[in-house]
Amino acid sequence: MKIAASKEEIFAAQAYEDLHVPALFRQWAPRLVKAAEIRPGQRVLDIACGTGVLAREVARQSGENGFVAGLDATPGMLVVAKQLEPSIEWRHGTAESLPYENDSFDAVVCQFGLMFFQDRTAALREMLRVLIPGGRMAVAVWESLENSEAYPIEVALLERLAGQQAADALRAPFVLGDRAQLTALFREAGVAAVEVATHHGTARFPSIRTMVEADLRGWLPVMGVALTEEKIQSILEEAEQALGQYVTAEQTVEFDAPAHIVTGRKS
Ligand SMILES: C[S@@+](CC[C@H](N)C(=O)[O-])C[C@H]1O[C@@H](n2cnc3c(N)ncnc32)[C@H](O)[C@@H]1O
Image 1 (cartoon, rainbow, N blue to C red):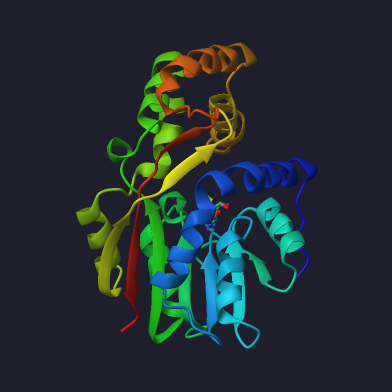
Image 2 (spheres, protein in one colour; image 1 turned 60 degrees about the vertical axis):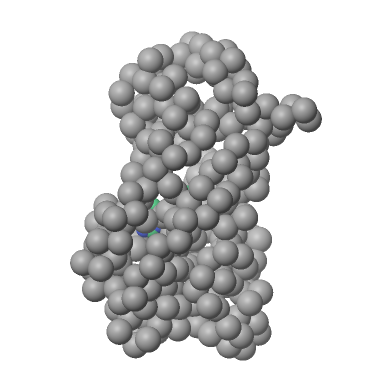
């Protein structure tokens, strides 16, 4: 299936693949594969696949007799995903309305997407619908902001220098950190055998500037917040000092970035 995206969308997705995937996301893919108990020959769907880091890991595990599909709402992500691995089925669509038949997959995985879905319960019910009876799901979400490092400081900086809307845009990835609420969300959607495991993770960026600039120029516009160049420069300047404690001897930036992996199955 042909996926169309503008040059700007493809550029943004390539920047995500080059910076954010190695800094934050790649380390979680083997953990999700393990949590979902992916085996050779299985049919697996990666929802909100982005540029496909998890789907590629799944494909390595499910092997040549398996079938892997990756679905995302952003066409630019899928264009980059397809360039990286043409053999996976990349589909444009939303998690709330999956373009697949009932009982199509042995497992469904979703890595750091659930926080952004407009209707999370509908998305979880869709995951159940496309799973075979007994099929397994594994879903990763970030720990709460207060249990994460560096980002609470960046959020406070944005709140002070750019206002509440900008700060809220950076809070958005952390909104499902509460374990009790997370468990209730999955149970109420009808997921069986729900378990939440909290894992240690490490964020690694080339520099403070790269990290904060990607948030200001890449993430905030996605969330509908555009800052002036003057504002961006003043935030970048203050960030050097505010986040200085996370700079390593090699001048890179490193901090704890914990996340929950929720597992469950279709009864
Ligand atoms: C933080 S990225 C994670 C991407 C990928 N799973 C990874 O680990 O690199 C979140 C992804 O969710 C996708 N997304 C947001 N809302 C969506 C929806 N309703 N349905 C499908 N994908 C969605 C975005 O397009 C984006 O690619």
